[in-house]
Amino acid sequence: MSVPGFALDGKRVWVAGHGGMVGQALLRRLEREPCTVLTAPRSVDLRDQGTVHEWFAANRPDAVILAAARVGGIMANAERPAEFLYDNIAIATNVIHAAHLHDVSKLLFLGSSCIYPKHAQQPIREDALLTGPLEQTNEAYAIAKIAGLKLAAAYRTQYGRDFISVMPTNLYGPGDNWDPASSHVVPALIRKAHEAKVAADDSFTIWGSGEPRREFLHVDDLADACVMLVQRYSDDAPINVGSGDDIAIADLARLIADVVGFDGDVETDTSKPDGTPRKLMDNSRLAAMGWQPRIELRDGLRDAYAAFLREVGA
Image (spheres, rainbow, N blue to C red):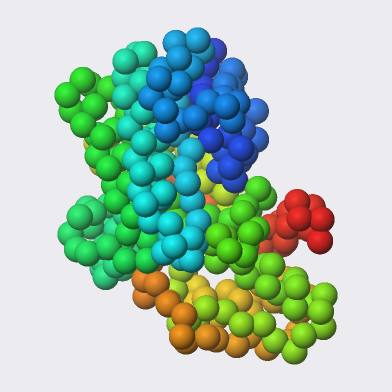
């Protein structure tokens, strides 16, 4: 049900990147709203400016949720920084500019918690942006996301566009990337624990010391927050979306092992990078709007493991 602000009733809402984990969750959530949801086929390359303009002209969305991105874990970011920087800048530039030219009423740009400095004070407030060096292992992706949110803000300032930016914490859930070479931590650990269980191994190994702490949010909770923010949030500043709690990677690995049913040991490989020591978001601005996540971590991990079994055919 819509509230005063930007009402979704009767609107045409484009979910850019609908095939990804976040995009799929947005489609599920928007089914409950009185709007028409638009998607673009994979043949629409969002890195190509002309193609993007043609799609906007043909489909005329009233609102855009920009969830399309090239994403990956530490290994993928380290090995392909040019792709992560170029592709994500191109996607943001083309879609945001086209949304302006085609008079889109509302745009939500999805960033990432990696935009914040590596050693930002915890929990991380939105005003920590650009106050210190980034984590080197995902710097290219972070720079592209910073460029996107600043571009959205610039169109607000110069043209009065109602373009907003949302910074989610680490996400997981159905539709995740299960490829061990490019996945994030939760799907990577689910796969490791499952394969160790199937092979009857004594242990599985995680990257780094296991000491860094991370915050995790089920993707369906993010989708719910995004739909609320499209309707009720309008500001230059990005807004954080997280769970409000964090967990050490080693403890996460043991929790996932328990959910998967693997009763062996979790070992650490300290020759591999840890990444940022801690990354907990300050969600006070979102909480003040009355929104809280609903899915507890253990329950969410059970859902993610069930999705892994379905989607990978394990």
